[in-house]
Amino acid sequence: MKMRKVTDRILATLTWGGGILAGLALVFLVVYIVVMGAPHLTPSLFAWEYTSENVSVVPPLIATLQMTGLALLFAVPFGLFTGIYLVEYAKRGSKLVELVRLTAETLAGIPSIVYGLFGLLFFVIYLGWGYSLIAGAATLAIMILPLIMRTTEEALQSVPDTYREGSFGLGAGKLRTIFRIVLPSAVSGILAGVILGIGRIVGETAAIIYTAGTVAQVPTALGDSARTLSIHMYLLSSEGFHTNEAYATALILLILVVIINASAAFIAKKFTRG
Image (cartoon, rainbow, N blue to C red; front, side, top):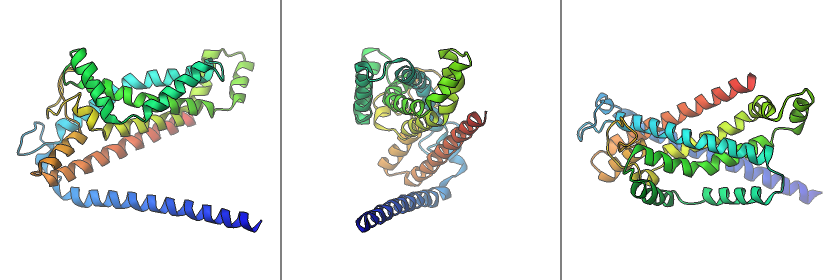
């Protein structure tokens, strides 16, 4: 009995210690970026056109939003409907289900640079898309697809079977039960996966350099090359001439991620209340 209490206290201490360390690291990172980046948020940094003097973040910011939206447009429907099939339609314990899960987990562990090389060989060279917005978005969609699929599956599995049984008992069909009962109950978990996917898209560099390129302009077509904020920050810091602007870009990137996460949380609450 005493040994169990000691073990519980040790585990509780480690848990609290890990949480405190993670919180302190997050606070330090945010404060450091704000302190280093805020003084360099000058008006020239928000010019519409990029030049080597103003190193404007507007074209990379717009390209980041376009890249994120396009990648989610490709990945979310496939990930969502795959998760629905695995939970609601496929037989439990099926070899196909196990194969799909194993494949998704394997793909989730592949380094992003491998996805970048695949996108370069397949989308850029083989399909002839060149360094373009659509090539980068397609590569990122493949990269985040396993994450969205697995989180969708776990969110649907967390919905109690009594919800489904009650819906069937009232005469609702399979499809109506899924879209009117199961999905609204699992929307917070699904959005959590989408948020993680967005975070990976926004912070990605290797996969985008090999597929979308580094041209600092506002993409007006899917075939245009684009530079995202993460690539912009990387290039500014590696060149060594605009280190201060790189910190400012990091601050803008941080603000963008916070806004996206807050918006997703707000949407999840709306769905849950509805």
